[in-house]
Image (cartoon, rainbow, N blue to C red; front, top):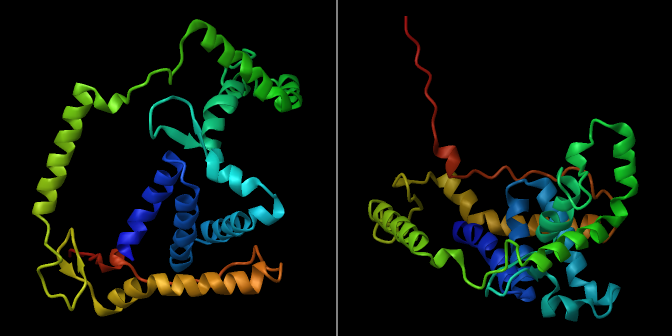
Length: 256
């Protein structure tokens, strides 16, 4: 469970970077179980709704599934392999950035007029045209042959970046060598790798059953709320599962 908890965000990002819709969808679907396990109500509710919408997208929007599989989940702003980004992030870094900053496409971004009520109202009226205004910025960059993503090589392959990456890898390996090897100790117990401490039975039980309980809570949410179309915004019953963070003990010292 702990391994999958660390892996899911990486696989979601990998799905976006490589434009693999099925990997992306499967990762966020499995990740929702952990949000239900550890009482992250907003993430749990809206992520499972997002998964339901994706699962039925071909019925609600015929042809959309094929579009998603061909590349609609990410945007390529350069020819560098694996340099794709989320659509919403790209929107924030282009259209929204040009419209909100002081030196935006029109020269009067939202950050420069928030103290002027009349100007603010005019900006709101123009918000539907911000994508058109942003095109002028992109066109200007193209004419001048400038931009942040015009290269065809990763900056990570620069000599300085390679050296720093190698140093980070070496430090990580050295740190792991000083940890307790969880595969060479008593296999009847669960250990916390950084502290080398054995996990108490009650915490171990919660950790090992977290994924199962999260899946049960998710199915209950789907059947009792989504299918019935009611009580979506009401609080979810908390699992109150313990984690390794509960192993920390605080001691108060008093002096006389």
